[in-house]
Image 1 (cartoon, rainbow, N blue to C red):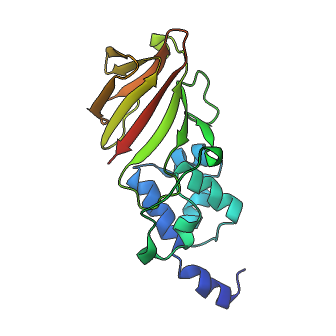
Image 2: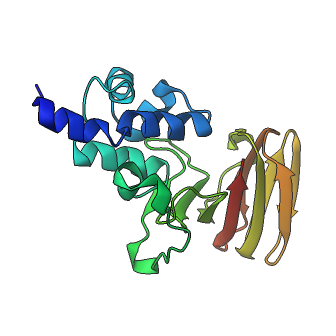
Image 3: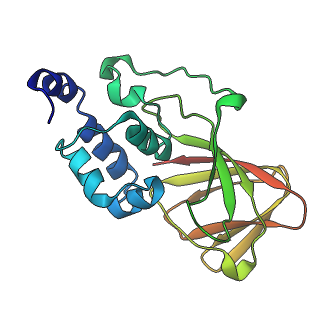
Length: 195
């Protein structure tokens, strides 16, 4: 039970509304967010509806999924950070999806300290994967990929496009697409997504 004074203080931040806004902006359901955070859909629903207040570790798990800092939940809406430096030493690397076997890539958010971003930028390292194991996914908006090194196999629908170092591609990310590294050499790329 939260004391009335504390409840009033916490309610002014609208943490549940902000959480729900992030989830819906990514067109993500509670079950999918649950898979990424390890938190139950029921708990996430209670947080969104203000029936529970999250602990900082719980809020940190959610923040990492959406590449935002904790200040997103507690900051003043009028003081959005439009200038944010992300140091290499502070970036965290995540697998394509937690617990997934045969992951196609690992990624690091390059802009997680900026709030209210218009796009998301990632450094992705693509892993070798047999063509038949490439998982297709889709999301709203567009995607841009610039291959920094190696060869990337980009599968869009049933077609596979080989992208070499220095090649780039811009496409409608609502098209089913997936990736894998081609060849033995490491493959990394800059990936930008926007809705």
